[in-house]
Length: 252
Ligand code: PGA
View 1 (cartoon, rainbow, N blue to C red):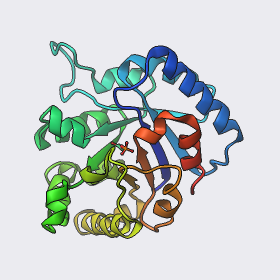
View 2 (cartoon, protein in one colour):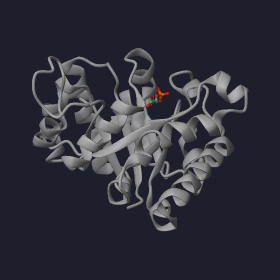
View 3 (cartoon, rainbow, N blue to C red):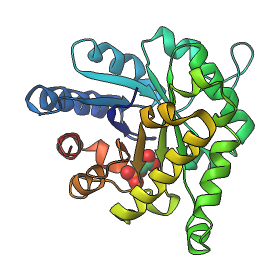
View 4 (tube, rainbow, N blue to C red):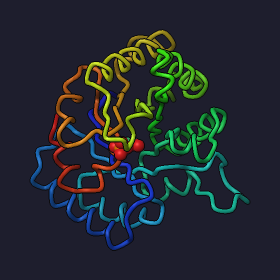
């Protein structure tokens, strides 16, 4: 079902104490903030997952993971499975983030496995896609995003695909302070929705949440979210500061 979502991707930031402080500031802020109709998701590192899911029981946010193993269970040292995440109350999981594609060489095949496992354990994948700067400069951005989607989440059955959330994150905008213009975001989101419509039909396309990510902040969120096909944001840097994150949530 299409929803407005603001998800905070903390990446590899914060100590245990700092995370505790940030969550408490967000909880307090959410009590006062006007966030009706917006699903708030916090995606901390695994180490803070238990604390985040514990606090979530008394607050109005949901918890997401930043990654999951492409294996179901067993002898995979250092990995965390979808089943484990589910058992802790995690409801969302980011997959395909450009940092994982770049630094950890994640492949389309692994991403497809991750999506399937998450859905098996009732966790909603937040699937990231987006082009590099040279790809945009070469006017190749639509093709790049199309193939990222076609080679992964389009392998899912319609009922499974219908649960996937997509995050369009142009790589040149991530952590750079350079955001896509409102028109660039809307144009790509429409393109993605049309791809979904061709593959799975109008109804599923209409009901898919497509988020924007990449230097989205308290100042530009309003304009980005005003686009009819931008259903929210995946927020990195600005999600580490409670007041900024809360402002973004209130930007709808
Ligand atoms: P940013 O990161 O908001 O810091 O650009 C977004 C993301 O990587 O999800």
